[in-house]
Length: 402
Image (cartoon, rainbow, N blue to C red; front, side, top):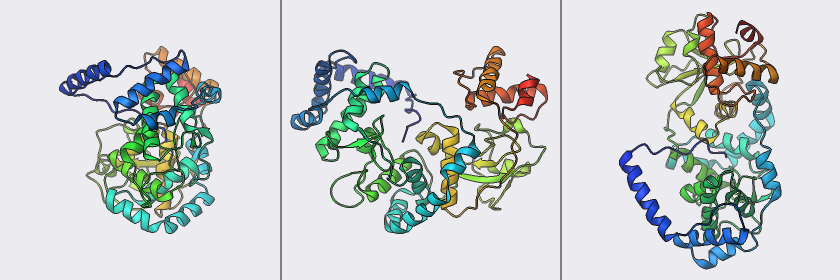
C-alpha cells in the first residue's frame, strides 16, 4: 500500500499545541540528521526510540546489523510513472483468475470477513480487492529486507521526514515480536505483508485476527484481513453505502461537471439523464461524481464518498478506479460494457499538450506525459473555452484544436 497523503492539521490552536509539544520533545530527544556516518545516524534513531519508551533491548535487536541497501536507493531513484489507460490496466488486473481466487478466498475466510464487516463496516469484496491488487492474495509480497529498506530511506536525505517515523514504528514492531529485523521482507519502500501496509499504520491499526497474540501481516491472512478493515474504516468508509457504480451517459451531459469535483449529488446526475447500469438509484442524496477515465465514449462510473478511501490508499486515478471496480465485481457486478473510447495521445504528444496548457496559464504540475487530475482539469477548461465537449480526455483532435 502506498499512502496517498498525510492528512493536514488545519486548526491553528492544535498547530500551536503541536509545535510546543514538538519543541519539548526535540529538546529531550536528540536526533541525528539524515546522511553522514551510518553509526552516528543510528545512535540518533536509538535515542528517539528510547525516548518513545521502547526498551533498549528491542532497539538494539532491531538496529543490530542494519545496513544501507543500494538496491533500495536505486529503486527509489528509478520510480516509473503510471501511463497505462484504464482499459489496459483494469483488464490486466481484474482478470478471471483473480476473480476466481477472490471468490475462493472470500469463502475460505468467510468467518473472518464477517467479523471484519461487523466490527468495522467494510464489505468482504472491498478488502479482497485490495488484497488481490497489492500482492495477489499474499503470493507476491516483496523480497527487500524491511528494516534495511527503512534505515536506507530514513538515512537518505531525499525524504527522511517520511521514512524516519516508519523506522521508529518498525522498531516498535520488533518490540512486539511482530517483525524480525534480520528476516522480515517486503516492498522496497517498507510496506509489509499481504495488504502492503507501512509500520506506522500497522502499529495504529493492527488487529490480531487469528488470536495468536501477534499482528503478522505476512504470514496470517486473518491478521491481514482484519487490519485492512480497521485501516479502511479509519479512512472514513461508511458502512452500507456504495463506492462506485457503472453508468451510461446522455450525449448532452454538461461534460465540464464530470471528474472528481464536488457540488453534485447522485440525484442531480440522475436528473440529467445519467443511468446506473444496475438500475440502482437508491442513494440520490449522496454526493457523487461522474468519472470517465477515457472520455465520453469510454466506460463511465459514478463515484460516491466511499471512493475517497481508494484515493487515500493510492493516488493513482487508474489504480484506484480499477481497485474500486474490482471490488464491485467481487460483490457480484457484471464486467463493464466494452465501449469505443477515442484513442489517447502518445507519451510525447501528451507532454506537448501539458506544455501547451502550461503556456496558457494552467497549473498541470510536472510535465510527465501523465493525464493526471491537474492536466484533466486544465484540459476541461480549454475544451469548454473552445466549445468542445469538456470531458477531460486528451485526443489528437483536442490537441489540434489547441
